[in-house]
Image (cartoon, rainbow, N blue to C red):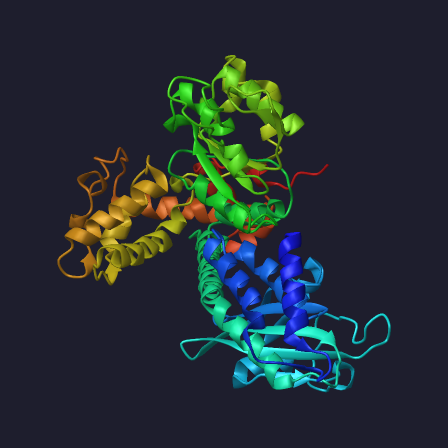
Length: 536
């Protein structure tokens, strides 16, 4: 505030305040203050930056120790301090009131001003900001608060704290504050709308985040086979840690869903979750996508761009098809994993990053290492906690559950009304070898739901490749025998997994003799040692 303005305010105050009468007088002497407030509002580009100077102006003019502008947020029914003079930022944060709470809340509720002669003696003063109730010289403090109204609606309050003076004209002081409140009312309304809009966005964001979390929790990874239960267990074990995860499995098994579950069950769930597919990007662009680039780094780089690592700061980065990375990019990624830092393409500034890495691949990285196509040191950095997602043919007992799940999903997506799937159609699903895994099954069910004419998916609704054993490259004496054998083998594997390879306990759970179980283990060429618990 300029010296000239200070002098003008002081002179206006001296002429406005009648010392002999000890009261505020009506007249034109308040015009310098009102004119200056009006000018500040009209010339402001961002009204938020103007409100604190206005509060300073009000405090100096009315000889107040502190002045406060509060705004009602109707979305949450709270009154928050928006601008002030004489309060620290920390104290301002403490000043939030419910409608009807304390003097501030009561003014918003009733629409009537309040004048408290001595706040130390007042019962209705909440004092959430924990301010001193007397001056340093032990003088009493008065509190005056008025409602701010726009179109007969209360949008906030304006209040001041000043040294108690029994001579003051209370009505005149309330009138001046009310006039100032009316002047800043429209500005307050703009801030009120802005705050409520932000509150709605926060609420919608929280709701969306909750929906995402529910969508990606393991309960929505459909299946109950022993192999899938093992995946669930591993997700629970690694989610709360900071370990790097490598998800293995064929294309279409749902590796991305595992990455989703790990992030949304981790301590980073509220932070960004960024994804990048290495096979979907040209080699010339992958470095820019991961690490970003500076303006002019290459032809067409007209502005600086942040990479996926910067966008994922504090959260998780899912790098799919990690086996497709070129040798130079493998070196750059290894550095990020080791040093937690990188530079943008075309830049020299080192950027620190705090990002959890989750990767996935359908390639055999061990063979790629032998062939010299994948760095061994990077492999060990990525393979801290490997998770193997089984192919659909390895968890055939989950197919009925998956089919029902995808029927419901198709009904919701396309407006179909499928009620069930016939037993013959289930038989066909069970004997197919599913090279496309879960993705292929979902597409198959969606197509069948669309072409079904009687709310039932029948075998004739399935693609031709699923309608005969011969066309699906599965040959046997009969369909029933194939189904029985596949289910029987899967049940034995499930039991062996649950019993950690203990044949005696597995036979007992299946209610068959050890000899019969042994014959079936030999028949299906099941490696029992594979399911035994590892020690050490």
